[in-house]
Amino acid sequence: MVQSSSHLDRSFSALSDPTRRAILMRLGKSEASSMGSLSEHFEMTLTGLQKHVRVLEEAGLVTTEKVGRVRHCRLGPRKLEDVAKWMTAYRTLLEQRLDHLEDFLERTKGTP
Image: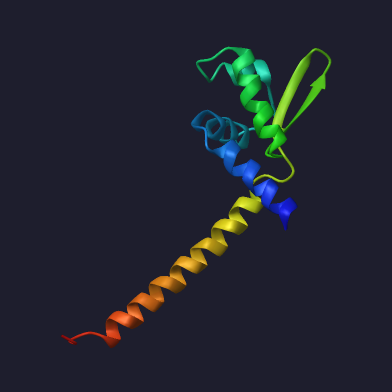
């Protein structure tokens, strides 16, 4: 459980930055992008983009591969499955709590 929690923590940490979320969206639209072509879509240096990609890579959300002189970046094998599972479980918990609240309100309706 600790290991999966660690993966989840890294995923949420990586997703906490809007630039990293935008990188994932951009990579989701194409099979792979070179770091240079990816950096053209963001107002930052290539070095700055590489730092964001490194965080995403450490979280398992992207992979990079050097082919010749060009480093390519693509969505990682884990993608967002762990985040989606956690969100589904959390949504279920919230829905159950809301159902209990609705039951309580119905039982106490009209009670002074």
